Length: 249
Image (cartoon, rainbow, N blue to C red; front, side, top):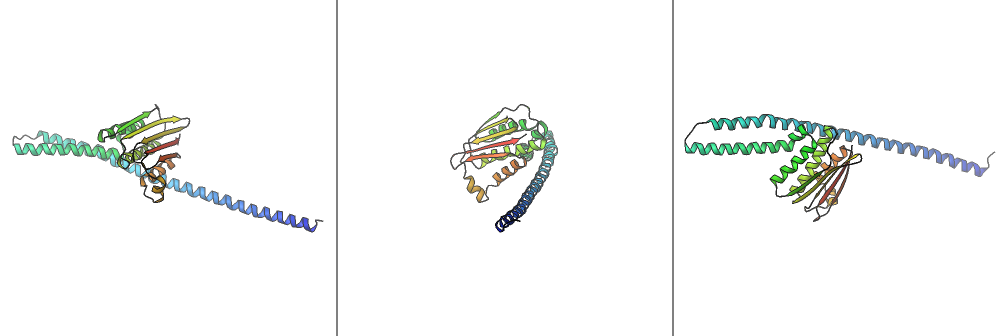
C-alpha cells in the first residue's frame, strides 16, 4: 500500500501529466491551424497575383500586337497623302509627330505592364533591357552586374523576380531621387541573390511600415513571400537604400 505522502505525489504526477498532455494537444492544434491559415493565405495571394499577371500579359499583348501596328498603318497612310499646301503639310507634320509620340508612350506603357522581352527572351535579357531604358529616360547611372549565365527557373518565378527588380528601381528613381544605382545578380549555392543599392535619400523603414504608408515596400515583401525568399533591407534617411533578396531555387 502507498503511504499518504506517496499517494499525494502520485496524484500530483498524474495530474501534471494529464494537464501537460492537454496543453501539448492544444499547442499542436494551434500550430497546425496557424500553418493551415498561413498556407491558405499564401495560396490565395499567389492565385490573385497570378490572375493579375495573366491579365497584365493579355493587355500588354493587345497593346503591342494590335494598337502598335495600327499606328504604323496610320502613319504610312499619312505619308501617302499628296498635297503641296503649306498649311496641310504643317498639320501632317504635327500629326506624324503626335503619332510617333503616341507609339513611344504605347511601347513604354506596354513594357511597364508586361515587358515584351520578358515574355519572349526571359528574365536576364529583360533586366538588362530595363536598366538601359531607365538610363536613357533619366539622368542617372546604373551599373548592372550579372554573373548568372543560364537561369533555369519557371516563368512564374521569372515574373515575380522581375517585379521585385522593377519595383525597387522605380522606388529608387521616383521616391529616393537616386542618381546612382548598383545592381548585382548572382547565384550562391541553391539561392538566387539580387542586390540593389542606391545613393538616394533613404527612409525610416520602421516608421514607414508602422504608419502603413509603404505600399511599394509591402508589395515587395509580398512578392518575396510568394517566392519563399528572404529580404534584407538597409536604409536610413540620407544614407541611401540597399535591398538584398535571397530566393531559393
